[in-house]
Image (tube, rainbow, N blue to C red; front, side, top):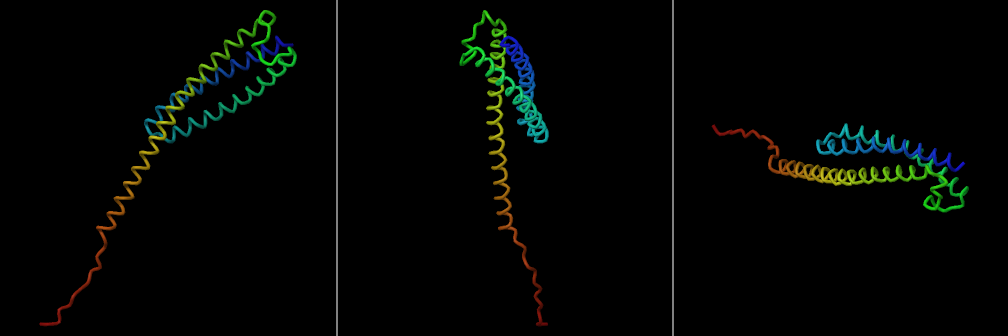
Length: 156
């Protein structure tokens, strides 16, 4: 039973890895989109990433369920204590999990940079809007509409 559960966990992990690679690509594309101020494309990318993350949530729930089953079957509190000689596929699982963690770290690093760029863009836009408001206020102050009056000279 444990061997089969580990096999299922490997399958789930491989699916998760594939999805994370897609998210990594989208996150990298997102960086360029932020630099180009392409808000429409950025929105599409974020929607795609959200859908992929929802898929990962499902995989993670299934993985955790299998993980808990193995812990209770083997009487252990984590997979580090499982006998690798008895379950050779544990080594493969650990390797895949390591690859997943590497991809997650890459995504996290790019996301941090993207967040910094977005904050910078928002600050720049705020500054631009503030300047527009100041110019508009100054324009109103100096360019008031004069009410034209007609003077009639009655002395002739």
